[in-house]
Image (cartoon, rainbow, N blue to C red; front, side, top):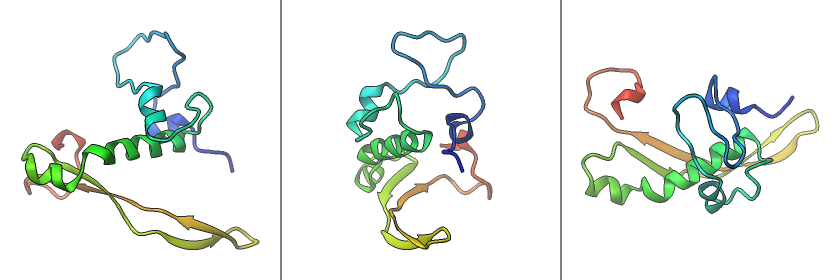
Length: 118
């Protein structure tokens, strides 16, 4: 199967912009410098999954338990989970699975995750 695309990971309208590009609509922009600071070596050729991992790693550097405890307005914690191993495919190739845990905190008013609440 093919790598998941930027649209599949980030949604309709998501695209990779070249340096100096302009866009006809407003939206979130994350510069390559932030992605490379998180360890993504070549953002221009990286996969959508690579971009997502870099964003999660960058978020983890600030959205810590310590910052959560000190800031009542912070609603997210990103922390390391536990690494494990699994096998995949018909030849049972060994894979390492690393985890990042996203904890979302809000006043208990509903049973669903609504991005507008964070």
